[in-house]
Amino acid sequence: MSSYSTTTQGEPAPWRSLFLEHVQGMASPEFTLATVRLVKRQRRQGEASSPSPSEGKTATAAVPRARTCVFRGLFAELPANPRNEAERNPAGVYASDLPTFTTDVRMDKLAELFGEEVEEDDGGDGGASRSKPGTGGGGPVEATFWARRAGVQWRIRGRAYVLAPDVEDERGEVSEGAREVVRALRARMRRVVSSEDGEKEKGWSFAREITAHFGNVSPLMRGSFRNPAPGTPVALPVSDDRLGLGQEVADLEDEVARANFRVAVVVPDQVDRTDLSDPRRARRWLYTFVGTGQEPSQPGGVVEAGWEKVEVWP
Image (cartoon, rainbow, N blue to C red):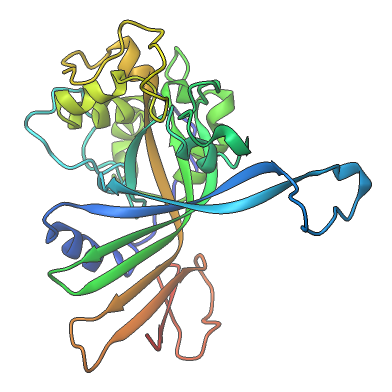
């Protein structure tokens, strides 16, 4: 398996334990994922003219997009599931503070996670006309959780990277095109095993982790990756007769579903916790990732495990 490693041996983020406690108390671990869509469009009458003649009559607008996603745990720590028949990575090798979710490569959000510009009229084709990107991304995101039982809102800001089947080559080594993504993730993963237990670490695979995530969802959810391309008009004919709603997939290597399945990993830069459990005494804290060995930069700030924590007015 992959020997490419820049993994750290730091401590858990100071917000991690409470965040997981609150998410586990939710009826369903859902969150709102906000992204930025870069839309190329023609300038409309009355808009300011282009500052440069070479830019022509088009402009790129950054527009917000949001949707509900399901939290799939922290990366490299997939929750135990007795129904998951996929081969798992060796347990207890890595830990992280990186939230994950799964998605279909044909969905609109992929262009946003990759920071791609799209045409103005491209918002409804669900990516059906675009090529399927592999491992990559790194676009800015914000994931908002409302833990109703605890009365706490969590907003996790950072960049989202996408893991695809091309993350490793036939030899199990990190592929050339995926190295920057793997470097970004490993830099924020923590090695749990001791140096004497290096064989377990060598056996850990990004590709196996993707398959384990695929196996962790229900057969009907796996079947959704064999749906017609999201966002395409129902009136259009479906070009592939293997696509259709309501399918159940048992095969963890199903060609069609796995080609569309992706695991997205959020690398947080800032975490915003607002406690509204006491209406008379709302409180709010910002955690900003600063790395190891840094001093506080904000009044009242405290640096712990590479994160600066400061209480602010809500």
